[in-house]
Image 1 (spheres, helix red, strand yellow):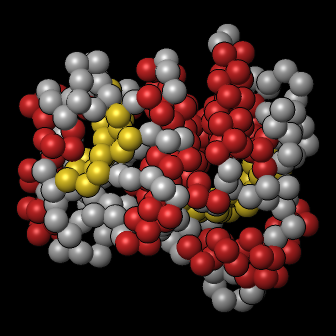
Image 2 (image 1 turned 180 degrees about the vertical axis):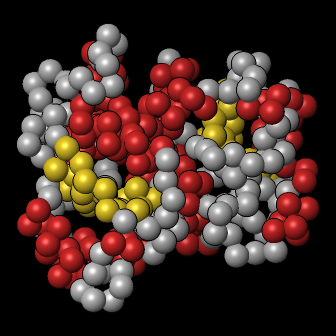
Length: 309
């Protein structure tokens, strides 16, 4: 049994195995329908319990399809339906019940400590479907997408992030260490990554480049990432934040400084941080990126259940 909470805590060799398995399984599903089961039925009879404390579209559907295609099933819980969220049952007792009924637990939460608490009491694997500090399933899938499109290891590419420092960027930074790729970040002053993750990068003898100028960050990039600048639960002065980011919109002019064959990726949902001309343009691979969540999350499930070949 293995957990999947933060890319920082998972060996590079395991992450690479997950991507390799996803590549093989995607290729074999070329002529299959969404609910057709993979040959061998590797997770037959297994139940994945999902709980979402935050809104979700791609993570919810992709995990549903992932466990179904592996031969298992899923049950999705809403926090407001449970005794746990209303204070009528402790987290420890809830975890013990989940361990009794399910084979794995995927949690999308607004509290990082809750993930660690569940990990302490669960007897089944736990997967981080998104937390305030990281989004590991998204970023591992993004690494898969980059290598699939570019047909080369991500370690040979220059990766760029333009936008706010958030949970997705934290996981991308962790991935840059685990997969040894060059990462440049373009963000306004005072919006850079926190010291804790920068110290972790330094401790692992890696370096990321941070620019307060979008053009400098994106120059000669192979891949350009972004995310919504104003998130749903952002408790800041939104008008001020949008003003601070006005020179960081990813438009056709800014993309022209990246390599000619560069691609644009966005975890979605999107806001004004990217123009329509880029989002719907030839360089945008966001729909392929979203679909690949299914294939990588299948491998993550196999990894957690000890079934990764």
